[in-house]
Image 1 (cartoon, helix red, strand yellow):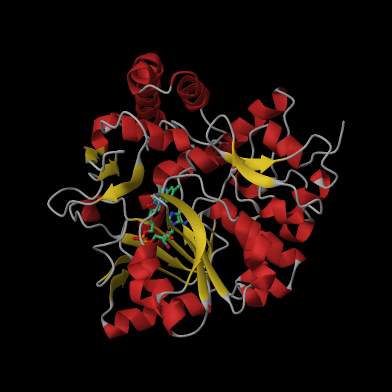
Image 2 (tube, rainbow, N blue to C red; image 1 turned 180 degrees about the vertical axis):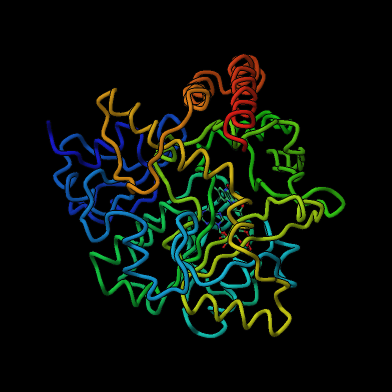
Amino acid sequence: MTKPSINTIIEQQLCTGCGACVSESKSQTVKMELNKSGFLIPSLSENEQDSVNMLRVCPFNPNPEESVADEDKIAQNFLGKTKHFDTKIGYYNETYIGYSVNHRISSSSGGIATFIFEKLLREGYVDHLFVVRDVNGSYEYQLFSDLENITQISKTRYYPVTLENLFGQIDLIQGKVAISGVACFLKAVRLKQHYYPGLRDKIPFLVGIICGGTKSSFFTDYLAQRSGIKGKYRNQEYRIKDKNNLSSDYSFSAFDEDDNNHVMRMREVGDMWGTGLFKSNACDFCSDVLTEVADISLGDAWLDEYRQDGLGNSVVITRSTKADLLIKTGIESGELNLKIVPKEAIIKSQLPSFTHRQDAIKFRIWLSKINNNIVPHIRERVLQNISLPYKIVQLQRRRTRSKSLKIWEQNKDAEIFKQEMKSDLELLKNLTKIYHKFRKVFLSL
Ligand SMILES: Cc1cc2nc3c(=O)[nH]c(=O)nc-3n(C[C@H](O)[C@H](O)[C@H](O)COP(=O)(O)OP(=O)(O)OC[C@H]3O[C@@H](n4cnc5c(N)ncnc54)[C@H](O)[C@@H]3O)c2cc1C
């Protein structure tokens, strides 16, 4: 069997597009490009000399170096001594829920990411942020240090982005950089820091964006069409809040070529997350629900007691001493309306993600192996057996996910997509209902 390489990762759809590997290529010809399924992946020639070496910084490496083999080991290496460890939360100091008084209104959730980045810049702890923001009507990672316009970096964007340029330029950048990222992107940053220790000082702070899966560009194409746009779109907004409604009842909007703004309630398109529509295959092989290698982890407080608050609240996990200090100082000054919550509240807020991503990962690994595919290295401690009804749900979810990408690639038409996906989505819904009943009766959950 040939040694796995970045080529294997790409062929077996295990790339989420972080772009860290690009900077490991000595040929300097590798670039990140959108593939036919709407994901950013490295454009690699078949005989790319460095393809095997590039794998060492890939978060989906099947054979990683022992000392950085998984999120637990990486967290131990990078976070210093933390107060607690929990098998679901990872290494951490404190758990909070709430919002930033100044930034919540213009942010996706509680505005904590914008608050943290503002503080890091204002204190001079870092000189730049490397964050996702608007570029010519779409979204890309870029350097940012304009404190006066800090809200320009707010809001999460469910569009393919890549860290490619960071690692290409980091040696030329004067000063220190803080980065926002989803779990696999931050794992790649940590791997780069492991192999290039100078980057530990250069990148002293990581903000983790809790992620239920990265989406293909098809996701946005579909939402734009469903909102009524026939041709090209720009400046899409994914999380328009309504303070008079539930926090989960947010809207999508985008501009068409004639500058008309189209707005659509996300509930009109149904569940786009639990169904796995337009999701990357690689995300099914990530067990890091809560961005365990970040200094601070931020997500939505999807809990009944917070859902009524349409402006949104964030779940916050501080992992490094610096992160906890920033949060505690913010609470004392009145800039943050956050309270300490039991760790169970954080776990409950992301429960469906834990059930899918961690509980069922052993079954997905088994499926991969019987198809002779490589499997990214996954921590032993998350592997567990699941019931037959849940295995059947998993099979249907995987079918729905891959079919959604194929159907959109072939037709690029929202009406055809709805028709073609209808029976699979219906089946998935019914199988999930059966599984929930089974859980209630036999597992008392
Ligand atoms: C792909 C994706 C999936 C997500 N899934 C979940 C989920 O399952 N459960 C959950 O609780 N929360 C999820 N979130 C996170 C959630 O939507 C909130 O964005 C998060 O809680 C931060 O809210 P905030 O108000 O503090 O951020 P804001 O103050 O609005 O700031 C957002 C920050 O995120 C950065 N950013 C924007 N887009 C991206 C991106 N694509 N990748 C990296 N950084 C980005 C911005 O530059 C900014 O710094 C997801 C986010 C993304 C991008």
